[in-house]
Amino acid sequence: MAVTDDIVTNDHEDHLLGQVMEILRSLDSSLDDITESKSLQVIPLKGAMTNKVFQINWLKKTGEHKVLVRLYGEGVDVFFDRADEIQTFEYMSKHGQGPRLLARSPIGRIEEFIHARTLSASDMKDHEISALIAAKLREFNDLDMPGPRKVHLWDRMRNWVKKAKGLCSPEEVKEFCLDALDEEILELEKKLSADHQCVGFCHNDLQYGNIMIDEKTRSITIIDYEYAGYNPVAYDIANHFCEKAADYHSDKPHILDFSQYPDLKKRKSFVHVYLSSSGNEPRDHEVEQLLEDIEKYTLASHLLWRLWGIISDHVNKIVDFNYAELARQKFKQYWLQKSTILENSGPSSTVSIY
Image (cartoon, rainbow, N blue to C red):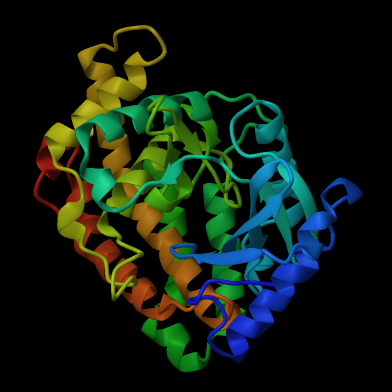
């Protein structure tokens, strides 16, 4: 078995490679030759936050073949129901919205390798790519998916608060103000919930690593549905905007640069494409209202991923990442913005909050 030089460098990588091979052996008989191939190549892919992801290449008489192996992060089932996530994945693949599921086991799964490239942090600044994402996200949000069409955001936050309290030391509970979060969540729920808001099927984790582009066709594919579910579409867009502060491939991937949050002009352009992609030109008040809602939901995004960072720091040992520091930055940003966002009513007043 041949592997690239950057694959097996220590005992930890040896263990991961063993897990990859265990997943590969779970394939159906039509693909058994993968494990027998002497030219098997295992390439770790960087940037995944919840799982460990590998590209597997091998040679057959018909040419080179590729698959994607996803090893589930340790303890991450506290964040979502794995059965629901697999159901979403299978539904998406059947409807041409993502890669096909080839095989799965308790520790991971094998997916079809999509011949497109994953976006980078710099791509998030590209106006054309941003417009493509906006149109694709509208298509995603409009999907008619199984399950109750209700907002999951607030219950998810409350569940994560309980998980975080159960994992943290008294010192950490105090540092992250976990005892006060139920009140914070209730306040946000009351102030952000509104009858006019559109609830759709949301990705809920639309960072650049979960978006792929075909360079020839310029088509966008949204992948990785662990956190997907019904929520206000304003939250999905807000979370996407907040993710522009991240570069998970840098030397310090846990450090966020909030100056990269899009300004009003860029936000308005994204929202206009998003709304108009349905075929109807949006009215000015529709654009303004969605912009205002998005700004408010950035608070929910900061709070949710702060909790995610706290919990991940305790349970996820498969991905090398400073989750606690990311949680601290989200914590700080939430408090820096809260009063400004909630006290102002229009999107134009939030241009300089980042």
